[in-house]
Length: 359
Image 1 (cartoon, one colour):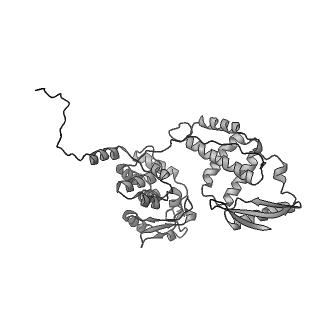
Image 2: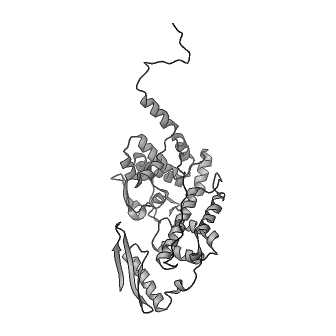
Image 3: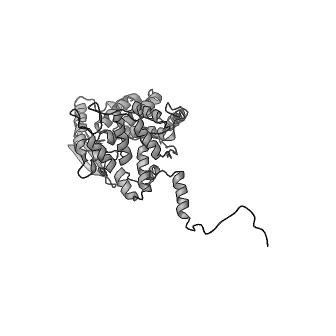
């Protein structure tokens, strides 16, 4: 009885709980990522077994909304870093599937959902239809919800899950921030936003990494920022060099007695700056620019400076070259520069549109 671990062929650890319920020996895989989390699931299931409630999920038809609340609680317990995105996806899914029983959802229902979402107008500029990338994030959440329900016995484990086919995406942004736009943006930004912009442009860090950056992660003597795995989207720690410009700025920042966060507003850590960002763009006369585009700008600048891809990826935390390439913007300036670099003939040849006279 208790918790034990098994490792798959891919090297993934799965934590199992073994306990008695209604006179039967139950062995269940937990969604836990650590032994401590698995112990929590085991304690919960033992308590349900003692009350005779362990098999309640199997005895009744579970509604989508009911499981959605349970699922979000599970993800919060796991410390999911993208919980905000998952909560938004569940919100949209619940509007459509809220009255469905979880076990009764079919592939046809999911296709109807896709069709409805594809015909939904986004409330964000430029107010086009919802993108395939957005729908895919919601479908990925749906797949995970069904998989977790299947794993935990919430739905019949003998019944195959409906296949969810993701849509093809063409969401690679080619928006590149020019040097002039960057200077105008800095000038137009409020003081607390200016530091966030500078850090993103000089390091390529993600918004969440910047907002959660604390002074104990910053070494001004070594000119390095140290991010732990728990502070990054990928779960892997990394070292980020501090540029001279950013170093000079960080040295001028006052330390708050209320928070250890590097970037703060009136002594408190910053969690939201959407309004300040829109105001800065409006004052600077800049359109169609997202804060995440500053990360794209960093990658493009490093590539133009002939920094090796492996080094850039180590700084930004990209694990695959395919994703990294989406951040490396090639614009008209790059294309023209490539032609000029490739022309090694000099001015030795001249061409005219006029037809030469025949001798």
